[in-house]
Length: 382
Image (cartoon, rainbow, N blue to C red):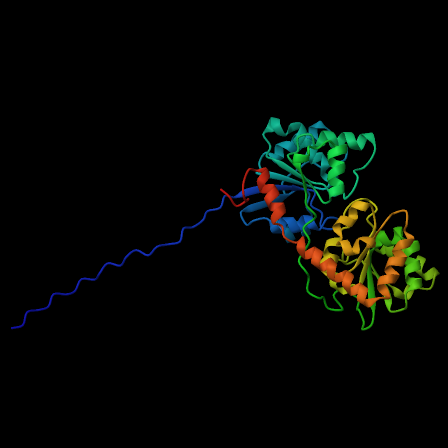
């Protein structure tokens, strides 16, 4: 009788190697002064933050909080003359975070609160993004407030060399605390549809010039001259309120150009539909970065802007002459006419704008500055 074969024992499987799971430390960042209407690049920075960073923002409206996925802590109201009591409370809110990021001069009281009370309450490091492109505001009170407010600020980020020189000289911020980084430009947008603006349609053959209503009213004489000098294919598209629209209609009706004016209150400015435009006129005379400038440049739109010399640093060298002095506003009309009547030059100006924007769309230098302030190589480091 044949022997029964012994059953074969199953060979134990070797344990499979598993990839190590990288655990990121959760960090909390407090943003003060986010304003998508006046400083759209503040939102670009929030979107660029690593996934392990939980972004909180003071006083963000519902739309902004929803769009950027922001937590909204209780925070004292920011006023230009905030006293020691509110500032002390601001500093106490800050201590619950890993870093504080202050956006723009309107949020200076938060930076001052950090300087005056940050050490006492053990607040985290603070970075202040200065939004001026040239010399800082004159006057002893403004300079005193900024010198005091930034006396202990470890990182001040400015958009231009001209601004850096003024901040270090006039506000006595140590040069080692200053970094020169332009606003983070958005990526090149897709070409929008001709009816992307509600109740407006860009028809075949039309050429559009973009402006904000506040700029168009401030430069109303130049606007009239522009429309008078260009043929009827050129139309002005303005973003503003109904009240501002009524003022502009009155101005242009008086000179017979009302049919070439289009006004919308549906958007803050041309940035969301930047690709619809052939030219843009922006007013930079307040010394800050014009809100729609990065988006328009990313879309390859030539931009003409009156403003201080430092504003030219945010334009490619080939387009430096499209920044005009505030004392020579007549050059706005001249520059617009030159570009409007020369399609080759207009296309070239737009192309170098797009190249400049693409070169400044990487958030890495900005994130590196913030992580360096914390003594880290990356905000993702444990």
